[in-house]
Image (cartoon, rainbow, N blue to C red; front, side, top):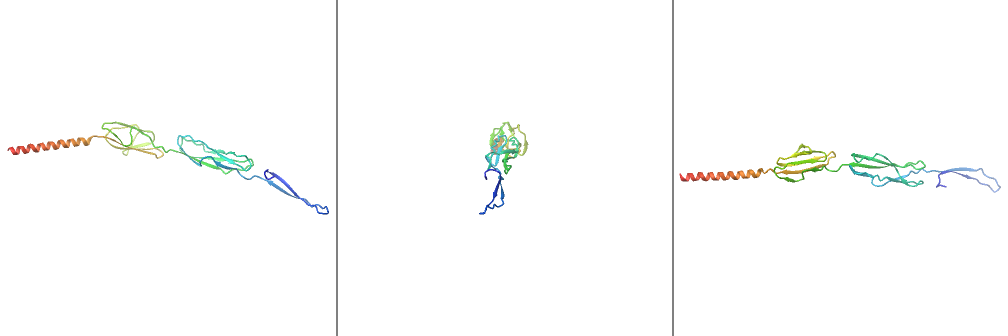
Length: 212
């Protein structure tokens, strides 16, 4: 019975027409199972998880030529979604006859793809002269116009600014903003006043020359 593992004895003999029997010859037939279970992953072989999100283990199943199918045994790394890195989860199975499956792997990558969040100012925002801005960011380090800038610092001088915040994973948030100064208006007014004064002086001088 080739569907049942075991050892079977088969004998061969013959008797001729005169009643003489041959010496029995035997054959031993051993039915064995050398086929390992086959494992199939549930879900993708590579999984990307954003840091802090939950990881759901989907597991894996196996089929075997003799044993009933079922769930594979899980081992390997424990996935910590609060720690960046690459984790390897392993799936194995051994059937009742000692045949071990080929190990199937799942790679779980915990990553950070979220750029830092800046508060207190929006990109391309323009503030009136005299405004004081308090700028904060939730992660990373920053520069303001190329100089180191700490979260919670204030900006109150007129000018154009570029804030660049970079976190440990290389995610970048760039924010451009302006605090108006009003200097150009003042210069314009002074120029007009100067021209008027010059014109008045020239008129007075001309008048005096004519009188004389």
